[in-house]
Image (cartoon, rainbow, N blue to C red; front, side, top):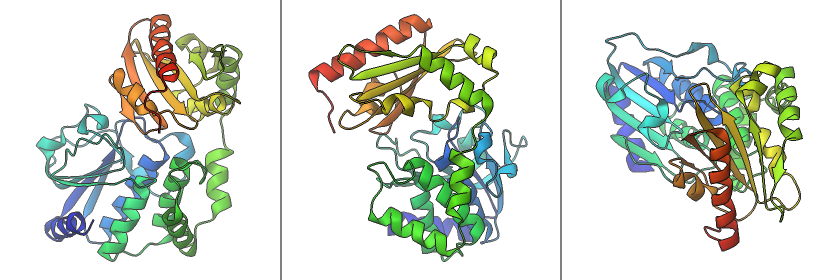
Length: 326
């Protein structure tokens, strides 16, 4: 940690501007960590640009600074630093920007096990969330953890730990959360805005998809499909599917839950979740994706029915062979 953080500190001393970014289709950890990281380095006098190929989902737009996130960067802009968060590979930030051309130094902060170490400076750990890494860096730099930063970090931590339910939660996670509360975080307000603020379209698309849920004979795998027609019928957007796959995972006996979602470009996005022992990141890699041990994804080309058949067959194969158990 000290070596990477020392290098980052040295770069901050000479930098005048920076771009902070995260992966496409950003989740709570990506959004919260971006905003917190930007707020931290602003304290050192840097002019910060916040970039993401996709704007934050509605449920995260209450976070301070979320309105600063843009989907494009002025042509010809050159940044002293680019800080990439929560992205296992540089390609995860999308094709809208080429950081190797517009940034002198790339800093990579991540916690995905399949990270490709793409940065000029890499800090990749097994932390519960990238927010924990941002917190550690902020403390190392001597930054003030004010309420703005604390709110963003807390939102990021609870979304990546499932409100402290997932196995990635540890003693350090709670200790950091405690420090964020000291900085003024209102836990009820943030949890309510994130978990109890679903759109009507989100409820309708979930209900429609659940009616067509399928499950294997041994009840170890369950899946549902969201088609473009269903999206049109309910008026749902991609962000309205946040957390849908977890409903399947909660079924008694289900080890692997899968959500298939038709995209406008003709591809099918697949989200995997496991409950206890199966490493779904290994399955996702079989289809060109990746992610965490118990939460991974991939995007496949082909007709939806064929994609479902291929993916479910692979999941069943892994389950029967008891491969890649955690």
